[in-house]
Image (cartoon, rainbow, N blue to C red; front, side, top):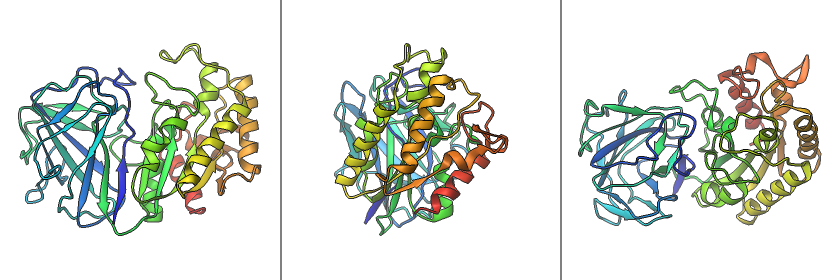
Length: 376
């Protein structure tokens, strides 16, 4: 039984938060990307996405291996991926493909390396902007490169790679649907200290990270992905093995109207609590229709951040009271109270604040995982 053990939600090619290769795409290059799976098993499958491509994407070849250090892979673990028995595959525009199973045994928490050879012009690339992990590219066909020395450029985004499924013999994965807090902003890059990583370590369950930095519950954005009520199916419900959905969304819907520092989202709509509640109800309905248990999380404190203001204060308080008391979720995690500063409950506790008064640090993410683990 295959279950999804790692995900990165696809995004439209964009400049994003940091320099990336999504707009320029790839040609006669190899792309090497490293991910950490949250479930183990003897075999795996890889999902590749062309969700935002406007023409077919050709994958000339692909390999998987256990990760060594940097772009290097462990000798003896390299496996070639096939797609319906073929080494190469074409992915139609706005579609995705899942590889055939590859015999590569992995343990939960182990890192694996996926290498793609892109011999034809890809055009702008479907990607995930904020990986908080390093990927690599190099010229030509480097599928069998063990040392990684031929990969001479680095990136902090993921491209085309949208999921890894492991033959884990279980179907109890937890999916975290969210924005930059779920994506891992504020955690130590390269250290796997996101909320999702901490939860997988604490519970031993597979965890899907369906966060996108800047994402909104109710509106689409050029940089920040499709609105959550639209992307839930693709990014969570269509993945095998998921039985629980956790929703932590709404801070950007509330906060973008308070700041002038969102270059792709101006003017931002002024959103009221009843609109957000309708959005939450839509997520609950979609997930329950697929048999998932749905857990709601209160919004984190945002006082003192660039998302804070009189309207944000009002709406965040109203939304959190509804999440706590509505009875419409299967369970609730009160992350707002867990991470609040006792001296000023509208602010993150200084021990958990990354520094922008909006995102947790590694310690804050660990607390979030601990609180949620108690409801699983």
